[in-house]
Length: 254
Image (cartoon, rainbow, N blue to C red; front, side):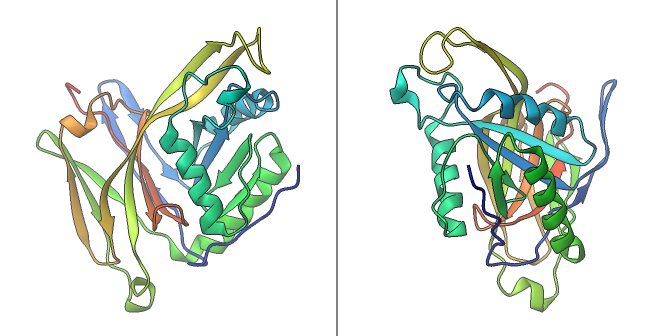
């Protein structure tokens, strides 16, 4: 399958955010330099190698790798047990934003800017290098800190030149580190497939237009957030360049 590298209209915008957070004895530290989204399906025979490859990116420092199960192949005899219609909608919105219309599985979207076949390590690595280089000078740092029973997300002010076209979405993403599924029908019938960093919720929690601002998240919004299972993304529009990303620290009692 041929892949196409697409730079977004917003050009060289970025995706870097430092965070050090401790909850109990578990510590999440470091910067998220790249965000990888794998669009996969239990009904896709080409997907298991990509599902396995995603785990190697999760193990890399500075990388947030997420698995979005989609329902585009549910008609082939097996209904994906992890898929959500909103994930399929997001994948299609990316294709519209890029302007290439390419929707397939396994498809990896890199930093919101480019896509590659999800099992093609060389292509994914190339796109990571390209997008990080393009956005190096335009990074946006997110600051996340405890605020009473919840969290406060602070975003900085950009210069007028940068801020002029900013209309970004803050996303809260919650994911499960591992989910194993015994597939009984369809193209993967009889296989047990492991899915890593499986997205279970992807919610807009605010907007940013280039000026210093704060967004507060309540304890209720952070239910089930433990270190390493939740993150904040700052993204141009809703499916444009990833401008920033940071881990969400665990909140006691969630």
